[in-house]
Length: 174
Image 1 (cartoon, helix red, strand yellow):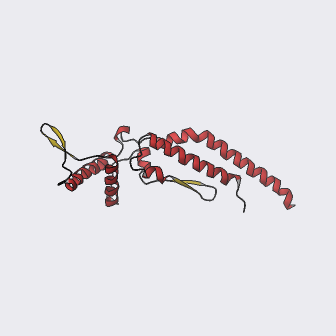
Image 2: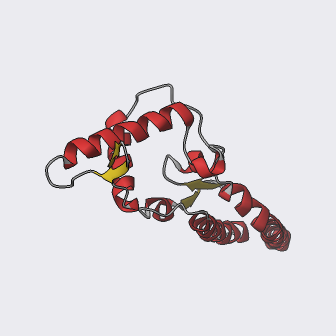
């Protein structure tokens, strides 16, 4: 079966959205480990475009409410620790006259565990992305605004071509 113009257009739309959303997420600073950037993909299933990314992409884009469950707690902590290391965040101790970075040789694990617990607790109580007031970065809405007209034009033209091709093929069947 030959590929329809709609499928070709959906492939083009998928690539367009993937690249724009990657660019917008990176511009908002969501690129510490690169996992979010690499996770964007799409599939075309029965003339429908489906877009996928990491689980936390929605929370970064729309914000998150406080957590109400401990599901996948170990996985969340592992990903959080990976993010902490990628950002270069170091644990510190609060002293009377200021702050001091924790020693990285002897008590590294306990300092990291303490820091990891504090960050995890804050995320579960408040949400994520403090700089956006825990409401998300809006990079998905920005991508929709930037590409809406272009996508409408691409899909309308593809539908038009498919309909014309179907009408032209009617004469061959009779």
